[in-house]
Amino acid sequence: MDPTIFKAYDIRGIYPDQLNEDAAWKIGNATASFLRSMLRGYDRGLANRQSLCVGYDMRTHSKSLADALIKGMNAAGANVINIGMVDTPQIYFAINHLGTCGGVQVTASHNPAQYNGFKISSLEAKPVGADTGLHEIRHISTALLHTRGVMDGAVEKCNLTEEYKGHVLKFLGSKVKPLKIVIDASNGMAGKMVPLLFDDLGIEIIKLNFEHKGVFKHEPNPLVESNLTQLKNAVKRRKANAGICFDGDADRMMMVDEKGKTISCDLLTALMVPYFLKNAPGAAVLYDLRSSWVVREEILKAGGVPRRERVGHAFMKRTLRIARAVFGGELSGHFYYRDNFYADSAMITLVHIINILSSSNKPISELIKPLRRYYASGEINFVIDDKDAMMKELKRKFSQGEADDLDGITIQFKDWWFNCRPSNTEPPLRLNVEAKTQELLDKQLKEIEGILGQPVEH
Image (cartoon, rainbow, N blue to C red; front, side, top):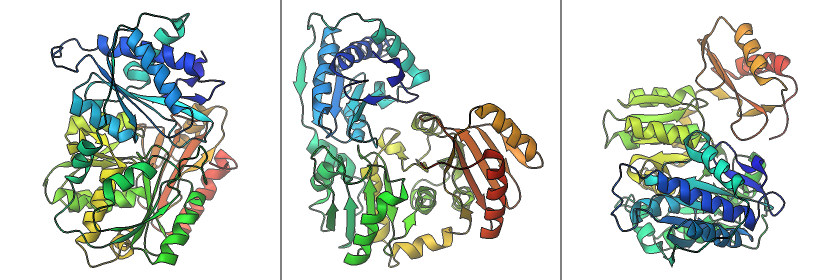
């Protein structure tokens, strides 16, 4: 087995060269052994407590990998509840709804079609990453010499569509306007889930790329601006209220306004702050450190407690739980909710957007307009051989500013700031810069690029 498929937050590789059915069996066996060993101190007597949930996305090899994964789990003595082809957030729901000790979603998220992988969650859908069990699972699975064993565990198939729909739509307000929303499913799991969840709400949904044919019309990554072109054109042509683009496993989303202009996810977080704090006064709201100054300002303005966290769903979910934050937003398009088991959900985010649009007489562009008070570079990537040395050089060069090392290096001045950090999942250094004026942004970006070198494409 190729050990490089084990990443910071999940397991991911090219099928079948790096990740195949033999690897899936071993990973399933190791995952079941690890998760069941973590039950000390919990009530093992609950009906499903020693079982695991498994789901998979629409990729052509996902079901085959899921079947092999399940056989490996059975060989470790674990019972498995197979919930079928679902979006990733449904795994988080299933673990909590069924009371299992954890679960696995077979998916490669936003990666191209030749990739696949596994997202592993433990009890209560807590993420399993490099520091919370993935190293142990890698060690156990790479030590296995074969994929044979007595199938001591059982498999149960379970369709949770109605229960999941009830959970997602319980957040829907009583007043829903007859909105027109363009949705680009990116040929991913939103193509299955959106019709099941939203088709009977009285909203006109204009569907783009809902087909599952093993290929993507565009890369299923909504953070890449070029992947939103089709969506933007459709929104303007059809005179829609808004547009939404989901990633491959439908746990992240990006939004464009009625004019076809992208709404960055930190501005969407800021927009939702008063909406949530109205019913949870004084609660904490979580945001990642790449987010605009406007997010913290809106939290304070609404009487909430700002909580700034490092990038990555494992860190965001942990802090959300510790702080009992009512919700959190990440620049990557993940939105996290206290009342969704402290987990992220793009479908629940869409429900909250519907609520906001239904309760206002203004178009989304007008709601966002007051929040566009700073100028941001967006995330820029650089290939650097010695990342630590480069971040130290930035800290030295901009030593007049207020610096912190929460994630990479963040340096703040009175009228601008930047964060430079190594990616948790890919080789580059990532840079975000924000300033009070476009001229200042351009000036400081040019100065930083003079140190980091030429940017590379995402």
